[in-house]
Length: 429
Image (tube, rainbow, N blue to C red):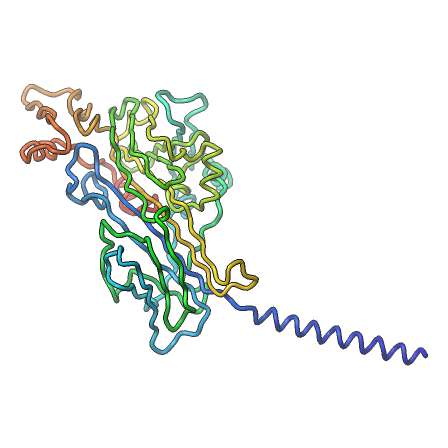
């Protein structure tokens, strides 16, 4: 009887082991889904009172020339790389970019380093002093500025001071995450996204290294309208007021201004529209919709219906130039197949943003009716001719007045630190 029971227990143990092996094999063979992201952006660097086609690189900033739309398509696929890769994204006719966009595997896959993730190391290495202000209003609030001096703080203290708001990590497809990484734009088809492009309609992604992916984008998730500043007033020593047109379908917006006060760019002034302390860099890029909604409630991100803000008086008085970065966040779209799956075959995310850039300290008023306070109030010697009078009209100024306005524009902000930071795209634009 004992031997029979012993044999029975051995059989049970063996059977359990076999089931464990089967379960392990099943878990190992669990399918890995194809991941596809569409990053949709609208950029605008025009200025109230300036012609829409102002020269690129004006004020030391890239771009210009009016609103622009851009699109980044990224795919990670677990499939084997075919001998002749061929993958297409069929787009709606409203894109005005032809019937499809090719997704191409880069010849040399290099992971793109997010610049803002390196801020802490850069500031520690360059021994900087940063004055941080926050909140919309005419005057500086009690307890401000908060000063980050890398010469007197330990690395742990610097990290604590530079820690921002809690955000979900954005992990779009990238080289090395799966067997295949492919993207558009690429060298196979070089074309700009037209200003009138629309994503609305049916989308079909297909080829020999992904399953068939079908989804539709509605009007509420199309390109966001451009950031348009309608009023900017105040010199660098004043309280600077700025207003913008409401952006339909956006969830909220955020503004951040930056300046340097020395030639080497070692002292920096940062201001954000948030009602609480934070450096703001992490918000100057795509932010997930749940995070945007939470931060609107926390009064970190401005609600979509807010269309004006004031920078406190005097915080940029010692600056050699200042720039405002502005972003509005669209609502994310998610698709997957099969719907609500246990093991999805593919997943799609569509995210959007609209960004703007504006030099500060130019008291342009409504559509540029008022000029820079520095231009008119700065002391002049007797041999220096007075500056030209302000134009009598704004956007419809005749050519001669436009030329006078461009000649009277202040020079780019001095200091290599300021220019380098802007040109490197510190804010992710």
